[in-house]
Length: 298
Image (cartoon, rainbow, N blue to C red; front, side, top):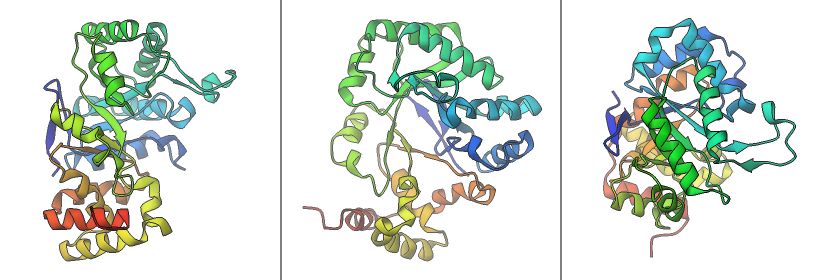
């Protein structure tokens, strides 16, 4: 079973999160099938569902919402994460001339209201600012995030894809402690482990969330062959597949990384928790890193 982890003392989420990035792209988007994915997660202790307003061309939240309308008892069993601030010329924003970020109070407020409606809920457990906005007025953005928490529409707030200077700027204008930063991290995208991103969060007790923990599928292509061979060997020794070992590599890090797993295959959903069965030694961890880098550490 998957344990819980506390984000900045504000919100407990499951140590592995189920990501619904592609839920609207599945051949079956029926409420019953979406509910079956959530139930498969709950059976493993995975209680946190990750969404974003932009997912599925701004349609994925509604796919989840239809399932929650059909089975309203599910809402009290899960934590809902969603994101906002990306405006792309698709879906409801198809009239826009260019993709941009909008961290204005008006846009964030409207996005949250739309998310609540789409997901058939009265509150979001965790709201993330999806991308750092170079036009951000941190006083305006910070205040609206504080206000959303005070209103009860959002339980906690955080960011996604931020560097520490982006985080510090926004946090400086807020009363609420930012809860987490969701970044791209995997055995193939190991840069955050050596460029200071994870070290900075670890220093301040911030548990990172990791999107694309399997490298967006690249782990199973030609580029991932060398590291996959190591993962396959360790997996065979412990009775799991390479996917579980790749996720366990993230879980093993002392910063308390929370991988966000996205798959539409129900059998794969049901096996996400295999990562918790894996035990990696320090030697194992560095062997995987060495294979990913293509050379030994300096």
